[in-house]
Amino acid sequence: TPFTIQLTFSSNSYKQEVVLGVDTGYKNVGLSAVSQDKELFTSQAELRTDIVKLLSERRQYRRTRRNRLWYRQVRFLNRGNKKKGWLPPSVEHKLDSHIKLINFVKSILPITKINIEAAAFDIQKIKHPDIEGADYQNGEQKDFWNVREYVLYRDNHTCRHCGKSKDTILNVHHIESRKIGGNRPDNLITLCEKCHKDYHKGNIKKLSVKKNNGFKAETLMSIIRWKLVNKLRELGNIVNITYGYITKSARIALGLDKSHINDAFVIAGGDKQTKTSGSYFIKFVRKCNRSLFKANLLKGGKRKVNTIKQAFGFHRFDKVLYGKIECFIHGLRSSGYFDIRHLTGEKINASVKHTNLRLVETFKTRRIALLSCINTGVSKENSSPLLYKYRSIRGMILS
Image 1 (cartoon, rainbow, N blue to C red):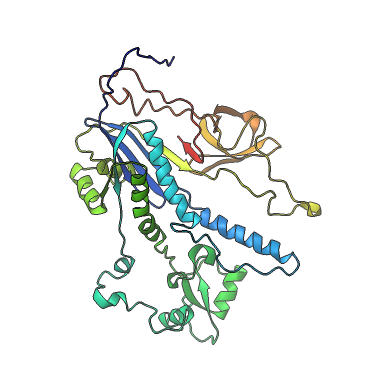
Image 2 (cartoon, rainbow, N blue to C red):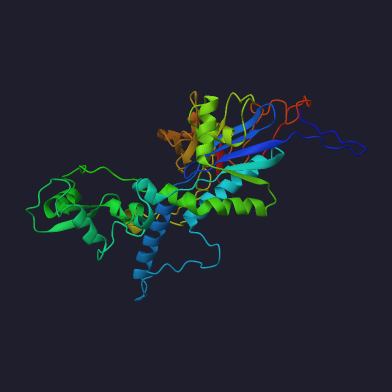
């Protein structure tokens, strides 16, 4: 049973120096806390990537709602907050998530210094390795009236799917939807009228064009890297900066495989320290759906109220045991049939009865047992284990 010893006299606190290494990223973040002789904590966190899609969905619902209200004008300008330091919500989430993870580790370990990999990306150099000097001012779309004209010229006014140019009508088609891929030229291709219609009718299942993922991750990390460093310094942290090429050379010298937790270990200054036998996986999730009603209309034109918070003693993201499988509740139904999945999102059963589930841990009072990572606490001389008590982690699931 955990207990506390209260001293009746003053005593100096002797703590080891613990360095936290942070491998920043667009989707995955690596964390590693290292002391002089061993690694105390390591984890990989997966950030959310659905915020852009949800914002577009909200905008569509708002447009439809305003169309039903007495000639109300369409909102077509981005009238966002123009205060200094304002960031789009999708970018702000990435910044806040990094800070939340760092504060989480600081709450369980006496971090004395934080090392962060501040990656710098030259998008033009990535696309064209030989670019230099004035070439930066002479972009791909120079001297073209608009993006459409450039795409047609780039594709030689030929359909990219069938390769024929007999059709006099050519369409500029989005490979991915505009709300996901945007209007960048890499997401646009030329299609003839026949192929364009057949694709939208479903007669063509897959276009013979390779998708280009663009440079979302690189652009976002270029935006938040210095904001993250400055924010942490404002909070009173000692922050050092390192770069990717330093991390790579040090990791290869140590003979470690490429992974986020290994990169974080090297960033923290890990060298001959004993690494932990296991690591934690943290996943950021949507806390709740704030929409009052489901989007789909049911029979009779009635909307289904989307206010269910718990059912039969279960909540969303409770850890449950289904047979011999540990999983999480992803979707609740008042009928008692739940959608259960792994933490990675892999679906196990879309409709399992609540009587077949056994509650292991609740989401709001999840016990974070860090004993496997911090076997003897922070100090080597301290033989009593460090037990981290019940804690509610807003928007995070730790496994």
